[in-house]
Image (cartoon, rainbow, N blue to C red):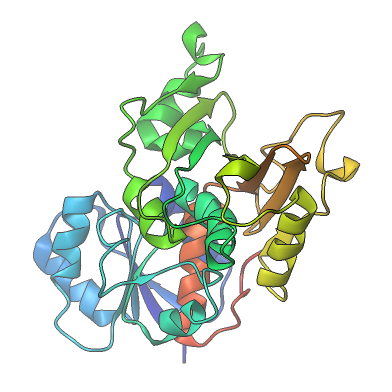
Length: 316
């Protein structure tokens, strides 16, 4: 029997990518809403409750509304907005977070897909907090470089206009008020007491993302070398098919000394790299912001929720 799936918000960047994943699956039946009824609450309610799984690819307020429309105990809601990522009643959709997280997602009827920047930051920070290398009071500082698809349809249109505006050719830092919408989950799920000082940068490329976090030994809970951190990551994520821990400072991690932000595009993989020396080091977490950073993560959560192989339809 196929799984009935509805995407509420099917025309957005994340919704379109989820449909692309689903179109390659023989084990799902996609329920589609008529274009003229996309904002019809009664029709959306009908399709949500007719589905086994509904993906919410909507702004926060609309996601809350759609989640409230469920009137049965069977439909699994997988939300891609920021509305529920720190909500205690929703499972955070990052199976690799802890040993118990995968089972929580399997058993959940409400799953919140992580943000792209947050996924990268949390996967690099959580093992360090768990091991006591970083105290929960650690004041983290990080930045992210990301492709413009993370900005949604309007930003994509701006970058892909012919000709594009000259000001878009160079990297553009943003969220400089230090209040990016991913910050609450970056604190809640990393194990830190407070959110990092975080500055994202959008570049003139479609997709790909890397979050770099800084560490100095005098600020750590335990004395470690970069090689120790790489070994800790390798142990923490042993057996995880979608998290690849790179060898320490290996030449293969760089291209003539430069880091390729786009190397994981079209995959659901996260690469964790450690660079540095005895005085200081950085961690770099790389992923496809539309893959493991959004739609791929949503599909991974669906696979767990319906009992399908976790990697079904995904590239590791």
